[in-house]
Image (cartoon, rainbow, N blue to C red):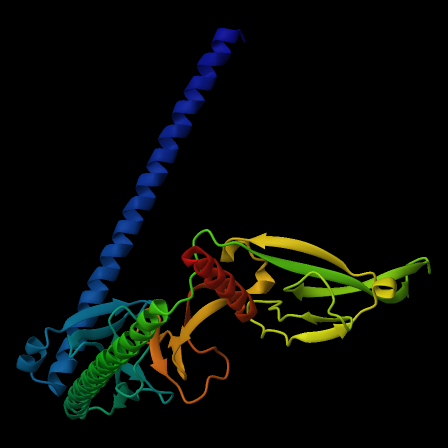
Length: 368
C-alpha cells in the first residue's frame, strides 16, 4: 500500500470514529434529558400528592397567605422528599413528611432555620402527628412572634439602659466640668491674690535693695596659711593649707586674725566668722589682695541672692486643669520648696559694711 493510500484509509477511520462518538454523545444526551423529564414529572406528581395531603391538614387560604413553595429533594433514594417552604417572622420554615420505623407510620416534621443557615432552631422545630399539623404549626408561629416581641422588648430595654448610662455619663462629665471650672476660678483667684502680695513685697524690697556706689572700690584679702603637714600619694610631706577672707592684710598685736563669713553655695547658709591665732614663722600666712568695684566682681562665695517669698506658698500645676503653674497655700510642703523670686545679688553683710564705711569716708573727705 502506497503512502497516499495509507493516508486515505486513516482519514476514513477518523471520520467513522468521530461520527460514532457523536452519535454516542447524542444518545447519552437523549437519555439524560429523558431521565430529567422523568424525574421532573415524578417530582411534580409527588408535589401534587404532598400538596393535596397538606391541604387536608391546613386550609389553602392559610398556605397561600404564607406564600408556600414546594421543593423536591433526592437525598436517599429515587423517591423525592417533598417539603413545603415559606418565610415567616424572620425565619425559614420547612414542612415535610417524616417516616417512622414502623412501616406505614409517619408524622409531620416542622423545621425552622434562619435565612442562609442550615442549622435548625431547636426551640421552634418540632414534629406533629397527622391531623395536628395546623395547630402545632400555628403554635410555633405564635412562639416565634412571642420571641420577636421579647427580643424587641429586650432591645428596647437595652437601648433605654444604654441611653440612661450615656445620660448619666454625660451628666457626670458636666458635673466634673463644672467642678473643674469652679476649681479653676478659685485657683486663679488665689494665684492672683498671692501674686499681688508677692509683687508688693518685691516693690518694697527693690526700694530698699542695697546698691554698690558708682566708682567705689574697696580692697579685700584672701589669706592662706599652713595648718599642718600631711602626706602625699607617695608619702612625701606636704603642707596642708587653709584660708579665708579678711578685711585687713595683717595680724593684730596679739597675733589674731578674723576670718569673715562666706557663702560656699547659693543654696547654703553663710558660715560663721572665725578668729584664729597665727604665727608668721610657723603658719606662713599669705595675703592676696582683691580690689572690687561691683558686686559682680566678687567671688560667688562673697555674695548672696536677695530672695522674696511668701511663707507656705508654693507654685503647683494642677494636671486636671491643664494649666500652668499657680501660686497656692499649703499647710506643709513635703517634696517642694516654697515659691521664691530672686531680685538680684548683693555682697555679704560684712562687705556691705566695708563699702558703706568707705563711701562715708569718701563723702566726708569731699565735704572737708
